[in-house]
Image (cartoon, rainbow, N blue to C red):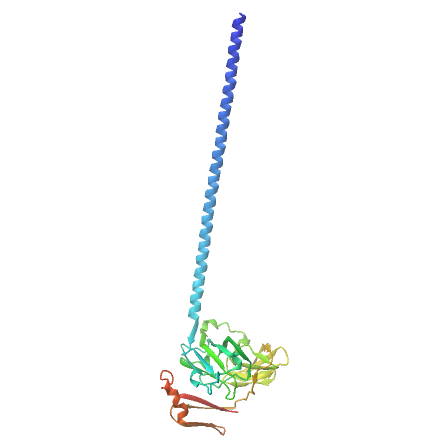
Length: 354
């Protein structure tokens, strides 16, 4: 009996051991399945997250693209608007030398005058005379005339060997539809010369000037005034009929709204006052302070004006206030040497008197 009992106990022990082993195997399989489930869940979550990130990146890219297209469209519109509103009219030849330079015995007058064809001139537009200048430091130091108006500038002159761009605002009333002339001059006894190139006129159409409601903008300076040794030259124009223009009590010369003059610069600021239709308009000016001018000549106020057309190859004269200007036939004969510019053209000579 004991032997049978032991056999039963051994069989029972074997069965219990097998059950325990099976239990561990099942738990291991369940644990593996749980781990696999966790791994799959993590992979799914990562995939969903990656998909969301890609979607968000695509949305961001689309947004940037839309913004870029909108910005490009805005730039294109602005460029188109600018090209429509602003116009440049170039001169008929590239450059000129004014005065006797490099040992020349005389000045060639043919390259002193530039012809510029301008279209659609309006009294409400804005306009600028633009050119490169070498030999003189600023546009205020040279004399020039537009469409045979009286020459202005050239009273306080500082020399310079560098090229610089000059941009002078001019009145649109000085321009005309079609051919316009810009004449650069120099005093007869001047011991210096200067060069100009890239002469052109820039205009801005009416719609860009509708904001000119500030009263100070009724007084326009052609460029920033420069003070030399306590003297400041001023040139500009007034929008409207100005009967009087003064600076700190000094009366300036005025013709058809255009003014110029030399005034003492005792302080840092100057007050320019214009009388327009019975009302006074004032503007504060701060001149650029420089040293001494290399050349200075007195400004003579012009009190009268006479005009006459002179034909090539024909002697003629003009007189005003006891002054007479006589022209011999040979004096204008050379202007017919270049048919493209001068053969059919009349010479216009203004004469002024103090």
